[in-house]
Length: 127
Ligand code: HEM
Image 1 (spheres, rainbow, N blue to C red):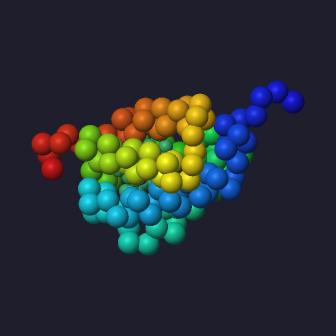
Image 2 (image 1 turned 45 degrees about the vertical axis):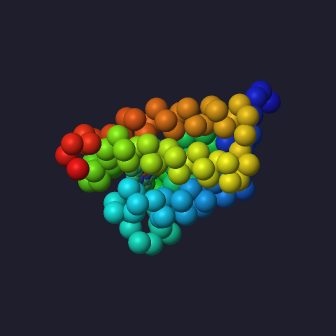
Image 3 (image 1 turned 135 degrees about the vertical axis):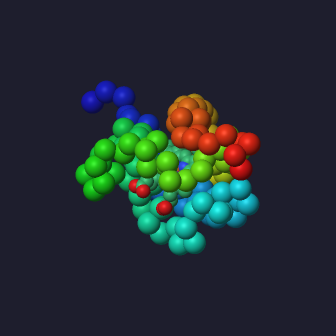
């Protein structure tokens, strides 16, 4: 049957918990609050779909929303280097909080770091 995907290795339960905790951190971060909606229900639902496929699980996001085109979908929001760092900080903290450790964490966080850098669409001085 080959190696498990990162999605299988983390498991749906832990992935969902991670995303819930992550957005709880985001909702309290002063640099991120201004660009997120007050109600995170839909954001959380979409991110669970997206991260499932990002980690090699079923293509839940694409089935409902089409091609992710992540950078394009982030253009309406001012994403500065500072906000990318804040996003990654909230994720690293969430990983600590749910006890995601080891190689799987390193692999996942590294990919998120690359994607987060790619989302930057505004320079600090524009703030
Ligand atoms: C949506 C901010 C990085 C995946 C959003 C939204 C904001 C945002 C404000 C809209 C939320 C809403 O209206 O519900 C940021 C910031 C980032 C960042 C500040 C820092 C670099 C990332 C990364 C990923 C990601 C690294 C994936 C690995 C998504 C997805 C959505 C989303 C899947 C939902 C898109 C949709 O509307 O269908 N993000 N994001 N974001 N973000 Fe990010």
